[in-house]
Image (cartoon, rainbow, N blue to C red; front, top):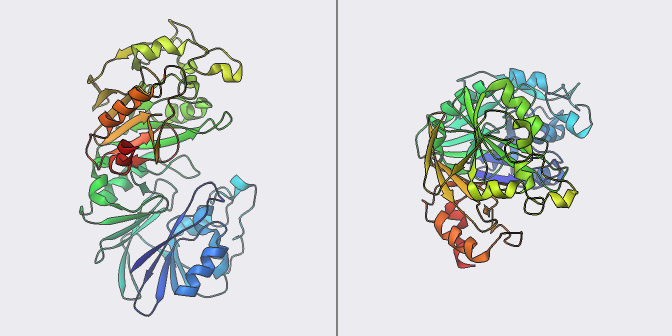
Length: 411
């Protein structure tokens, strides 16, 4: 049996922990969390932990190992993850201004190798070294139960970030392909977010999506999505602090285009880095009209004017139902007004990038200039007519799906 336990978000995001158990209530723990106290009590009151599997060395997955020091319970991890335990940068303890607590750890660590089979509590568990998020990231597969524990390598709708210490985007793409080679009926248990049937992620074999979140210095982080074919890339929206994203892009990819969903400043501010450049910037004609307006773009909220003027950018207008082929991908344009007149979504394979139209659990406000409630209702009908297993990639917060958003039609 597999049971999920979910931490709080003290480290910035909720972390998923799993217990794989037998009929004696003995369990194999998959990862721990930051501030593991309450979960430790809950889990150990229910199960006798006999082994621990660690997917990677980041603080939000290893901090709870402090509760198992000196217990002699075997802790399985890759060689690189073991080495990273004592490194505050590799383990990300530096993010909270702390040194690693595992410099002289008393854990019973057993190093695992790629393709090794672990026999634990009657389960045969295959080890996959899936580098990309970290140098030692590891995925565990129970083929009999069709279960994949992917850590932060693969999430619902996208792969993990590769910008942490030791991350590598080429390794990540290879690791994602390896996980997605398993049959459709496998269930993936990620380190964050919901469990998902693998068949609903197979589109990611041909669509590499990476998420960057920046701009919290204003009000809220903005999601910037990068879609690549390994060498060339496009991005959906820009953000405040976009120079940080651009640095990563310039180191790894040839940027071939930018797609803008709407004209609010937290989605267009990064366009200032493309003034006088040849990079094509796709947006609706109405959105271009708006991006020079201090009030419509909301720059008035920070007492600034838009940082560009007409003629500064290489803007290409898009229209509803148009299909743009770029970096070997077909990008379908979907007119989705409501949050703003001229707002646009982009469909690539099973992925709908909809800016500030549909969020997880709600639709966007229609009270900004050019917003309209009737337009929003029509847009919801339009977007939610797509297949239920399509993912929705919003401009803020977590991903969702068409299926999980259908209730919005009845509000």
